[in-house]
Length: 433
Image 1: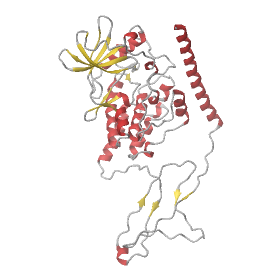
Image 2: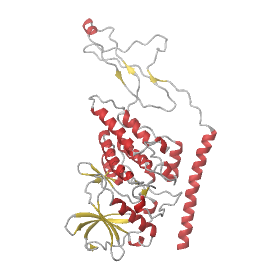
Image 3: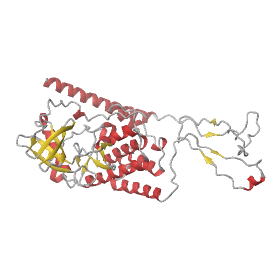
Image 4: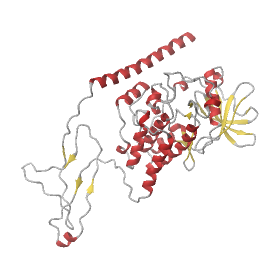
């Protein structure tokens, strides 16, 4: 299986300049943390491995010095730290301290993770067994349940922000673009009334955005459930449901005109898991689970049903869907007294465009009935079954002109909006230069 490409970074993370030097290495920050090595660098800050005064390892996230004059970035970094310090789920990265040095350097001290990201796991192993994928999704739900209860919407849930510690213990990280829902428990404490994301603008990683988030519309906790559905789909199949989307415009076009194929087409999974994923990926928020609690109940019900049965039925991604039986007309009498063997059921993909069900031929070319396939006698070889014939299904009616025009209008509007945004950015950049 080909390796998955690295997801695109949010727009705010693309143009950040690189650090000239690691001026922090070997130095104490705020008299509390000794920085030992730089682990990663992003658009908002750099992450270092450090030790506190007691010698315990920590991960230290420092806001880039060139962003300290950007009020929006400073507010977003401060909100991330203030949010993380309130989250205590075992499946959320633990935050030890949030601070600012005397010379204005802002930092967040967190637990040091030693495992690998889910993105790296998928690149290394491909699709996961459905039991492992569901267990990871269930742990992510525990993290989201606490965040959503406090009114925190992650908005950037993706494989690279889900960390797998030894023993596959799940940690959700990077609440850097989290949004505080109005009326949430933290909104009155942390929300200063300033909207950090302008209406009509999108922020996040577009491959894992809900349709309403991709369109720059207000979103709620159900946007995180859509993103989790995308992640679960990728864990089960090793691919994304809208792999053709290479930019926000094409992704929006795919969301408006396409429905993702069920994951059972590509992987052997229980039908209940198939239904859970497809409901999470509903285009309209009202068609998804109302909250993460409903999603947890659905997952637990499927897992319990599968655990209570030894013969779990899964959807097999195979080609045929006809039933082949072996006749016993000319077998010895002793064989006729034995119970007939169970039919062998061969399943096919749920849909084949333009082609109906694959069925065995009813009559031979000369008009005589085809004899039933026979079970071989001892020490003989079975005759191969007749080749199946393909019966063409009736063509479906083309989409109504009005619906097609509406879809094209939406696509044109999104493309025009992106072009206008790029033009404004170019004008501002030219003015600054």
